[in-house]
Image (cartoon, rainbow, N blue to C red; front, side, top):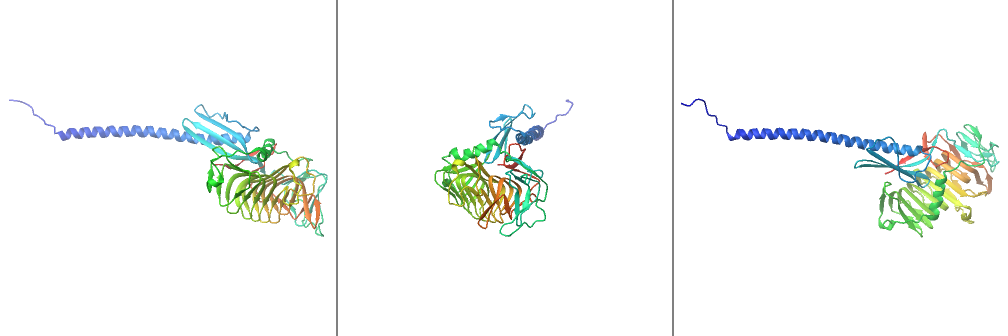
Length: 424
């Protein structure tokens, strides 16, 4: 007789056990993979955030630096051994362009920005060079803010029987100026003249005729278009890190959409109603038509040498002319090597035209419209009733109320710098 019992396990029970074991293994593997992925994503996110923060620190370092970093350098910002940060500064028209690259293993982050001299509430609204002539105000002229003027001071005057109508000559403080204008950054000035003389690099695969729409990032090398003949920008959409140069003339039509470019030619004509944001560098003349809107940080620069100044009957030659109803947010600059003792205006701002930013003039400035910001000029001039009046302002307004707390303008030699605009 046999004792005990015999048990039989069905095959389905064994399969169920194996299934449970596999399921548990998969769950454990999933948890391990999830934990690893979580840590990995966390580290990657942390590295990305640190890259972005280090890029900001790199830009801030360049803004504070008094030297131009022309070569790509390794910046020591105490960021540890695992991350690398490199950067350099180059000229971009009248401003500087800062480039910063940070790397963490295979992660790469690039930031670019435009830098200019800081203008704030402490900056003078008007700096008029000492030329042993007082500043004379006529009509509805108004100057508000802190000013530096010749030792002879400010007085009221008469033109064609019209006197000064203000209750005060200067609505703010006044102190003497010096016999020279604040120095511009030397490298910036050299670059502006270099644009006109020697810049002829051309990208053969990048021409206006090849496409109606052009976009080029500032994280890449600058694209350039060069022509010996005139260039007409019409029905095009162009934005980014692009320079266009002509040896004769550039015309910007109302139908053109232009953003962040630099235009270089002896003569640049911006027709009525143009809207955009760009820089212009010319050596003979710049004319801006009626009701244009050039947004911040646009820049209009006429850079001349004594040998290149024209003896001509064209009333627009040797000057920047801004017509009625036009608003420019940015910088207007007239440069001239050598003396400029003449009786013609080099910058003309017509009635109802508005400059919101900065005007720097090494010659004569005829102001009939309005400047909100800062004016730095050798002299003023007024052409009225067939006569020329030196160091007169007739109906012009210079004020510092309709401006930001601080903004960036033309690079000055002894002025701190600030961020103007992030690029793309």
